[in-house]
Length: 87
Image (tube, rainbow, N blue to C red; front, side, top):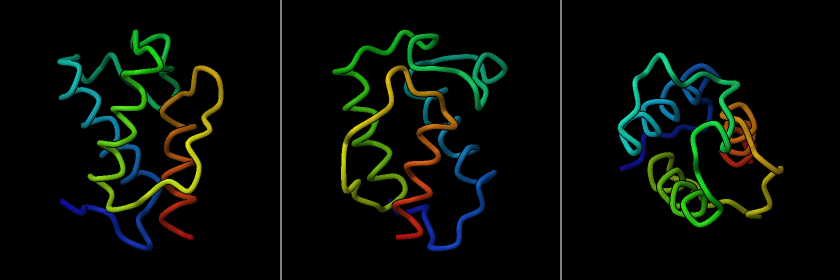
């Protein structure tokens, strides 16, 4: 499913990303914000790779590099999505 678009707004990216994480990890929406980090979610590196594959599918992108900052926040992941959407 491709919910992405070349000109997707930052807020749309964060909303879709947050929704994915809330659904995937059965979290309360109010417990996840743009500044929530991988560590705060309890996601290890293997689960993070699985999540990023889901992100690629959801946004219809393919990450050119899978190099993430240590303990990325949703904002960090949104930056990667945005960079890949906007080429």
